[in-house]
Amino acid sequence: MKKVLFFIVICSLMMPLQVFGHSYVGSSSPNEGELVEEPLEQIQVNFDAGIEQHTSIELVNEAGEVIPISEQSVEAQTLTAILVQPIYSGNYTIHWTALGSDGHTTEGTISFSVDAPEPDIIIEDEEVPEIAQEESILEEELSENEESSEENVQEVDMEVNEEFSSNSALFLIIGIIILAVAFILVRRRK
Image (cartoon, rainbow, N blue to C red; front, side, top):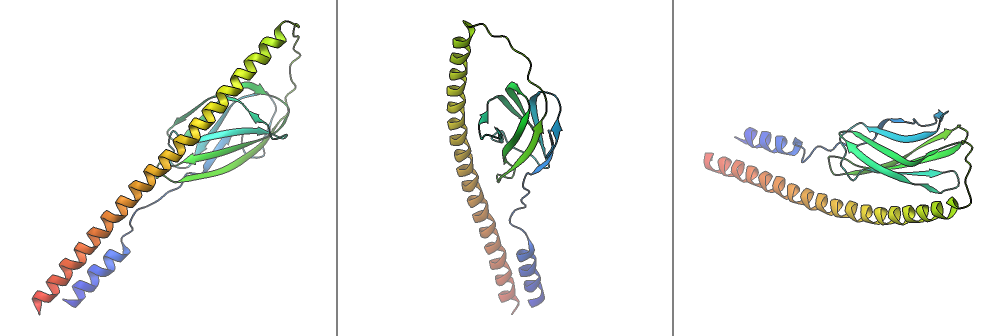
């Protein structure tokens, strides 16, 4: 009977509490170190595991300025971001933060360059104030969206931590019950 008890204890110790798989970039468009030779309007990041809606990217130019993104969408393992305006010649870095389907957050960067000349634009004097006003409105909306996104990520992190704590407690209780039953069986046989 001691062998049975020993076997149950070993099996319960070998049983993992949960299996975790973190989400990392598998591929992207543009890729790390890539030289893009045409204006870039969209970024696509493919992860090696499932990601949640709170996954996001931020695009920064070589001067450290954030490039506005009009829309980000998550579908299965892919994040797609549409830029407000195409980007032209320069060095850029994508800062990504992925909320994996396992609840863990991972982050990283993808650096690339664009070598596409800007088109010649003729702007009449009357249009300049309107464009500046529209840019100001877009910057305000972007700032509000970033604040809202940060709050949502914190809420999800709290929910995941609470869920993990309750799952851990459940596995602990089940383990104790298994050990108690094994102990009772050993005591009865004596």
